[in-house]
Amino acid sequence: MSGKPIGKATHYFDKIGVVVLELTAALRVGDTVHFLGHSTDFKQTVESLQVEHQAVKKAGPKQEVAMKVSQPVHPHTSVFKITGEE
Image (cartoon, rainbow, N blue to C red; front, side):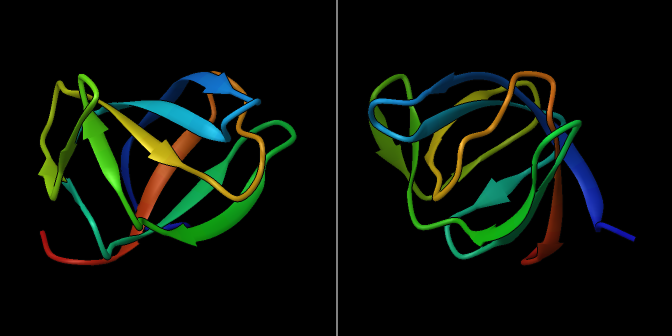
């Protein structure tokens, strides 16, 4: 099991290593997430989040959030929360 589904990737900016996520559940700095898709499979702790270019500590359902990632993430990749608060 990959954890609780919390959204999907919509864009990836390779020059800056940032993915945009469309959330269906809350996500906070400090949570651990699992990116799982056709050619993507890695886990990472959320170190920073941005909503409309402003740093935030958490984001909720129906928000688009940007997150720095350690590996490329393709659009439509599913995102699961492994650890963190509900």
